[in-house]
Image 1 (spheres, rainbow, N blue to C red):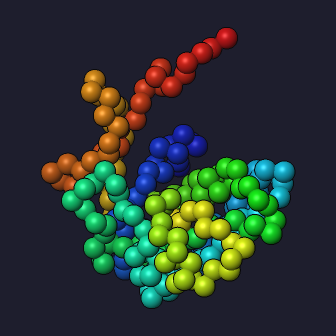
Image 2 (cartoon, rainbow, N blue to C red; image 1 turned 60 degrees about the vertical axis):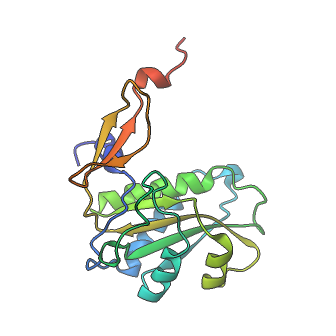
Image 3 (cartoon, one colour; image 1 turned 90 degrees about the vertical axis):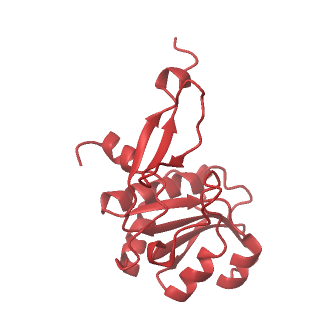
Length: 193
């Protein structure tokens, strides 16, 4: 890795994986361990994690996720391209009643850790909560916040600059390269003193 910026730029939402490349449970534990060092509102540390490398559980989790909303003709990866691991991030309501941005910080940290190990992932907020709660027997005091799908990437993803039409929708070209338009830095900074 050349720099932290390179790691961040490599950390794109990956939706197609090598389903034959398995991830051992201890790798998921190492990724969650990184979150212990993250900022947490009032230092309450209310996040709890469910880890899955089980093929059966992975299929159940997969069925609860909304895959790539902008790709209208694509319902998600084929079986051989599906994630081999998941981390479900929950908030323990016995420890906090507001999780602020803790789960976002944790999810980004997990993905950066995964990229550093040659893995990739995708954060899901489009989740069938009721169905997933049932599949995983999640207790009432745990609120599902995000799901992270993980695996060895087989997808080529490139960052493009947003064009004159200001279209920010990601797309796949005729070679199945996934393009992600990003706004220019000048469009993001609205004031400097």
